[in-house]
Image 1: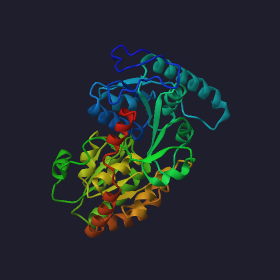
Image 2 (image 1 turned 135 degrees about the horizontal axis):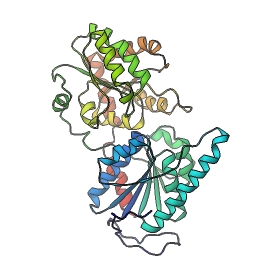
Image 3 (image 1 turned 180 degrees about the vertical axis):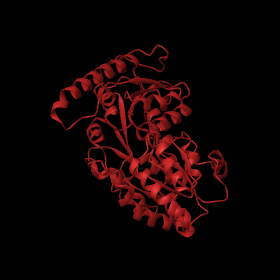
Image 4 (image 1 turned 90 degrees about the vertical axis):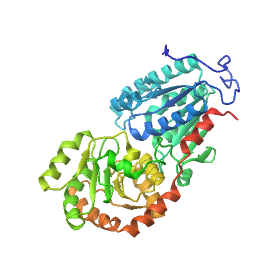
Length: 392
């Protein structure tokens, strides 16, 4: 697994002891970021890698990702190397275990080979099953490891990898109780992409063809969209707009639902700016006066940095309901309203409409925005990058 285009930099010594690295301070070297499959895993990693390059411009950065095309699309826009892993998510169905273990062992073996050849200074796990092979291999070689845990409730992979990591980076203090006392945890926040803290709302609205003088509702189901949220909004928006004609809508649907949502608004005779996906989420959220969203950890971190009030419909299909736990952090602080996603659009309609009526009130929005601002940790990417780059 040689990267022919990558130079190997930094002081190294023979592998086999408790450490494969000489103590060199903030020098250039190689760093491994492991994870993928969703924007919620990759975007924080890209944010940290970008911050790391500011400290060490010559740093060689490699992402160990899944085979999913989303990973390729997101990393294509960067200068970082990519290694595609065959590892698959663990299944509770016993007949799938042999396939899982085959790809797990293969990915760990290849990660170990890569680490022995390229001798990275540190490995950062980004969460999810794709973080596992590189973190496990690095731990066995004595390479410094850390994992990001932006969700309020850690997933199965992070609970497993925490025992093999020198540091677990939390977004919120409430996650600490999910790890044992021997785990070193620090609350630094969830790293977010550049640009969220300095966007001009007027310019952001212009980018999406929105009127700068009218309030904007932004709806997003994250990078892949959320069908139940999308369909509920197509039922709620016409009634809401009749009562509040001054509002305008930017609806980020995900590729699968773009045409359906666009047709629904057109059939109802209401205006809506419908976009499948945008890489300019800083502009999209900064253009908003209020946001309707899932409750993914990265999205909530971005909402607090831009200080936008939100209505959250947590993803309802996950067994541990981690998005609901995420949403409660903001709701308990007064920064968000929670609408339980009951999966059927008509079942969500009335409760979503009531929540929209609440955020239509400007003083309510201002209070919620202030609460969101108090939760923000805009320097999370920089702080994690400093830990990676500095061995002290």
